[in-house]
Length: 263
Image (cartoon, rainbow, N blue to C red):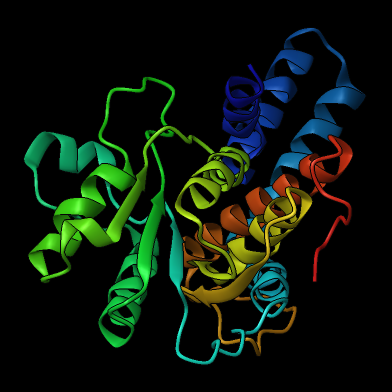
C-alpha cells in the first residue's frame, strides 16, 4: 500500500504537476469568485514554474545530494560483490522491443560492467523489479542478465533480485540475498544523487556497503541564479532533486532511516 501511495503522491507533487494543480485551483476559485484564493493560487503556480524552468535551483539541490558520498576505497584484492540498484533500463520500451535500452541512469550498469571486468571474482547482485503501477514490464534485474551476457559476463556471477519496486524494497530484499549467499562488504552502485537515500536504508538494516556513486548530473559547481538557456534541463534537474529530497524526508519520518540526510 505504501508503494502505491508514494506513486500517486509523486504524480501530484512533482513541480510541473504541482503548478498545473495550482492553476486548476485558481480557475475554480475564480469561478466561485474567491478572488484572494485565485490570486494566491496563480501566484504560487507562476513561482513554481519560474523557479523550475528558469533558475539553477534544481542543479544546486541535486549537487548537494551528489556531493554527499565519495567513492569508497576498494578493499584489498577487490570487492567480493557489487550491488547495483535498478532504474537504468527503459523497461516499457525493452518489454515491447527487446534488447536493453538505457535511461539516463544507465551509467549504473555501465560502471558495474567495468567493475565486473576489473574484478572477475566479484559476484554481481542486481536489485530491481518492475516499479510501474501496472506491473506489466520486465524489471531491471531480468534485463540485466541479457545485458551482462552480451558483454561476456557469465550468468553464474549474477544474482537477480526481481521483486523490489522502490529503494526500500531494494534494501530489504538484498539483505536476504546477501545472507543466503554469504556476501558482505559489497560495493553499492547507484546514481550519485540516489546514494544518500540508499545508504540510509541499507545502514538501517545493518548492512555494511561501500558507496560507489555514478551517473552524476551536475558539475558540482552550480550556484543559485537565473538560467534562461536550458528550461527543459532545469526542469529535469529540479524534478529529480525534489523526488530525492522528498524520499529522504519520507524515510526519516517513517522511521526507515536514523538520519534525514545520511553521510
